[in-house]
Length: 410
Image (cartoon, rainbow, N blue to C red):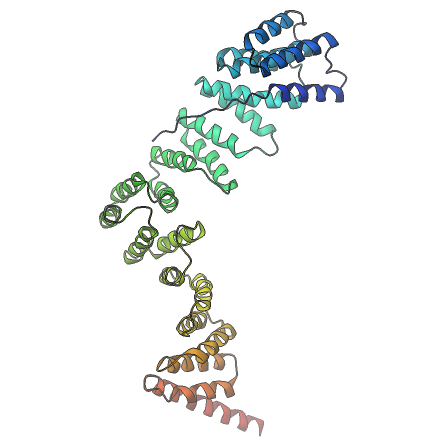
């Protein structure tokens, strides 16, 4: 896959002229004579009225009346260059822009902006190396380059088969933009594929599938890459999933996440669900959040699972989610948080689940050194058959510890 460069050379002639004159007012070395100023203004008006032939004649005549290497000539060259660029006569526009820049007669800020436009013209005319050199110089001098500049130079580097530089610049654009374009990911994917960086390509495809699940080409490519990585079963599963499910349905992504977990790749499952929920492709409802918690737990990411289960518990009045949340907190040895969650679950749970919660609650309270409360919880747990034996052991252990403390006090 190779992206086609698209260039937009904006017709900002009047604004350019105004900004050039504004700079001139700040520095006495950049001044236009009244005659040149009036002639340029007339040309601007003709261009605004799309009377380009008359404007060209006017500017060419004015060009002959200015001294070589002067500020006035550079401004006329610049304006004539923009006229040609608006007519998509890029070779002529490039020639005029380069002459204006080479004169070193323009203010630094104006030269800087003109350099970027000249770089675009080089690229539009498929002179990629020349355009890249100018863009690199421009980027070094620019304090806050827009993402579009990184995308532009990344595309140019791709054209000259410098895929490492392509990746470097397109990643900057992706990192700094909240609304990343699909084409940017496509360019990144293509560069990784050219370098045979298949694992990185898989990561990009997983992002594309999450955001654009209706694009069958991404599923096909993902299946092919898994096959290339000798993951035949995973490749087959992705292929079958793409064929059987309606692409664009959130269920597709949920099933893909389930497949990753089934294939013992739970971290990928969690990443896919997290991204899908964040992008609004998958709803953050009770079932989907539970799926996400399952994936984080399978990936042994207890804290991430706990964070999700805390949200789940707010959506469940049965107490079962509070119990599950408390169990994960217990495993993380966050004793006080576990006590809080398990105490809430005790207020909601019914039947044998109360025995499980009572036992865990007692153990968490014991770890906090609250033996009295722990004894109360274990006493409740012994009423349940499944917890009776373990709770009884804990009660005997607490009684012995309390007796030992009395002996020490005496």
